Amino acid sequence: MREIVILQCSECKRRNYTTTRNKKKKTDKLELKKYCPYCRKHTPHRETK
Image (cartoon, rainbow, N blue to C red; front, side, top):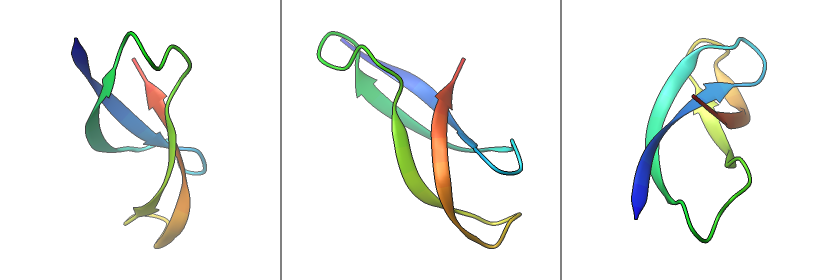
């Protein structure tokens, strides 16, 4: 029961990455620290619709 989610940069609001998450175990929004090529630094990326 994994679903594909899109990760959005918290600073520039661009959608950079896609990943999967377990819908049953993780009910809150996913947040990972990833590299943003537009900001050119590591920023928190949050899950979007």
